[in-house]
Image (cartoon, rainbow, N blue to C red; front, top):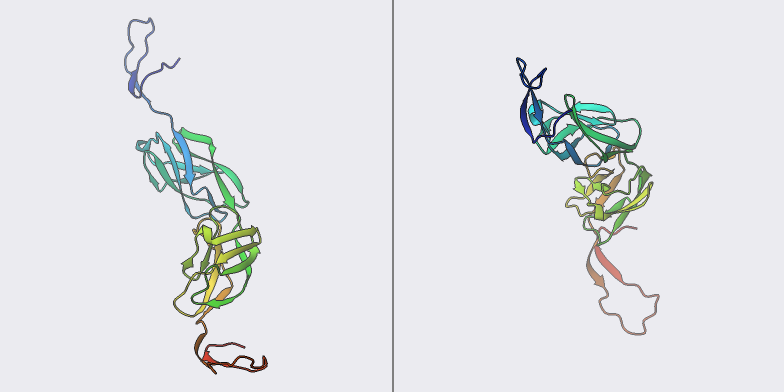
Amino acid sequence: SVPMLDTGTYAVGISNNGVDRGVGAAVVQYRNAIQIFDVTPSQGSLSGGGQITVHGSGFPTQDGPALCWVDQVSSVAIAQHSSHVVCILQGRQEAGVVDVYLQWGRVAGRSTHVLFEYINPAEIVGIMPSVGSLKPRSGSRVTVIGSGFDAGVGLRCRFGNANCTRSAVKWVTSSLIQCLVPEQSVPGPVEVKVSNDGGREYSTNGPAFLYEDPPSVHGIFPKVIRPGVSHQSTISVIGKLFKN
């Protein structure tokens, strides 16, 4: 039987009589068990391609590059340390939760508690409204209609290059969310996109949201109205960028 020893390197020999030691010896190493604690991010797109980091302890980095196994598909680690390994996520055909583990040669570290979830990509078919001010009123939201919207912590909206945090996105259903409209400095159309994985991958071919300069008032005539004036009387408001 294998004796219980502290971590280290030990010589192994053979004796036929329990006294005399045979010629030659082999070497065996006692190491701490490989443990996996978690994987970040814990969600990703079916298309793969992004990076995931597996955290743990006792990783035998001296044994060469690690193999990252996600749903029984392996890839060679692109960076590794004694407590974490970075891998490229491979694609998958169907959404779902899968197991993650690492392997160095015949030595594997596996934990059924470390799971990764493949999620469907978000798609947008429309937004309401599709026009707004460069400096929207506080709390102004755009309703986004589509499919595959995930209620998890990775849900994001983007207006052009302006990203919305998770707290700025209200999940209603898997086909409807509401996003706070961020400010822009230049008028014009920007593409609206949605991400389920914290902004690593966004939807494509999103609808346009048009930012416009807000209307401005320069004057009013008459400036004084006498009490008792008929409600049918009119006043003129002078300014620019008024719409019918």
